[in-house]
Length: 125
Image (cartoon, rainbow, N blue to C red):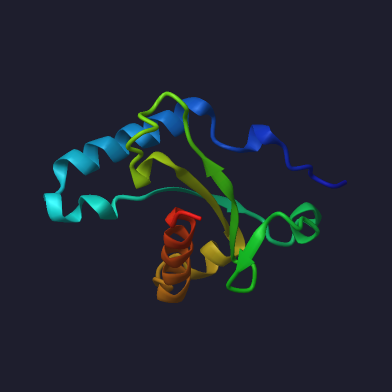
């Protein structure tokens, strides 16, 4: 029996709006010299061996598939003339078996990949 990936598996609009509001709080609380560094991402558990993920050409995979980029979410109720970087929420998956094996030791390589990918996505085309 194959488990299907559906839009219901992604964070709801309410969660996305809440995440952007957290970004507002951090942006307004940080030292002003650090404000441009506020980013937003959902990091969701996923199974990299699931057939739907293995065969999905739209899922970008990194670090042997342990990290996957699914896409981004944003709202249209924000100020479109002066958008902040944290107003887009990037959705990444991290393989849950990888997490179980590495829960007590940070993997700086995967953290670096995640951060670099977000910075690439933020750059205007």
